[in-house]
Length: 567
Image (cartoon, rainbow, N blue to C red):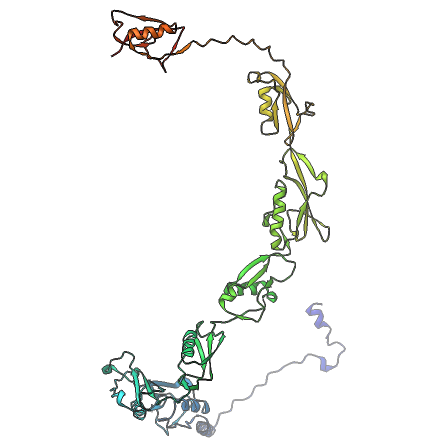
């Protein structure tokens, strides 16, 4: 409904006069002058009201106290009670011998002054006696305890440490020793450190004075020397290093009977409370593990939480070294991928698969593999013997089939088909040489006994080891074959007559020409000698027809030799 339609329902027709639209007529009023007397009376009244308001609300009415000689904390109490703005309160410290530390020396607003709550006041607060002010060191060794206490009090010394101990040689109350901690007496200040040991006189019979123990070894040595029983309590302490004594009973410088027991408390170092990691979320547990080194292990598990187990019970307090040995097993999930754990199926070695599954049982994977039927071993044109041809992945508990490349349950059963060996398609006929090349590296073979090297170019065929024919031109790597000739070899040539041996071992090849002729004549060997060059009595030697020396003194009856001069 439009705005016009909505308003039209309120038409004045047939309505009483009160429903009809009214007509407004402006009324003109005459201006009247304001009397001067009224203005004056109003101004006086306003001034009176302002004066009353000032005295009631704005006039200072807080009386400033005298804080000189009071503690600094008193100012704080006053500020809170009077609701003073603390921004205006300033505290300045300065050293002052007459006022102790924390006592107010001066204030910028005089006491008795009336102030507002936004008052600004500066207070001078004593920091005590100046620790750097030099102090004359008296003859400490000749003083007694009362004199030393008086010197400390009068000079407001800050770091004088007095201990008392029994002494058989120094009278009670006298100084046994003192140590100024390496500070020169002329440079000694109120804040310099000094240790003073004062005698308690001879020690009562049957008692010992307990020293301050710092280590277990020191306490054991002292207890053994003084024949005192020692009890050692080891506990974690976040403030003391491991092996440090952090408490003892009796305390230092106290006496005890030699028959009593001294107890020392030795720190085991910082203690760590082991939480319940198995109830934490992954983010919580990993954040804790990132700050605390542990013996972290991982395994697959069907549990839903991130941490499978921890070797130390939750709530146990341990040292860092003990925590480092805690075994924490982190959950890798309730399923696994074969590739993630190094499982190779198709093309992989079956025995390696079995070994791998045995290895990963420690990871929580209870999978196993087998070829459950004899039909699961077949020959393959692609895979060698023992290689996996195919695999099927099934959950053992639910008998559900899964894609082997996807997430697998922890109890997966790998049903595999294994290669019995490779099968090859070859040409079973050809030359011996061609068939040898064909079979080489594929199967074991041998040549028929009548095949010689010179027959490698002859035609032959491949048969099984028992001589039966190879069917379908297929051979298998785990079987043995034989190459036999299909072309008859030539008739063998007759054996040649043996060549007679004509070699002769001479007894000499050097001597007189006459001796050498006699040697050659004795073996029926032909020779030549030039009488003009070599007389029978001259020194000579036997050489070949081409003037070479004989090798190994061997000559041949079918050759002619020469006798030549030899010098």
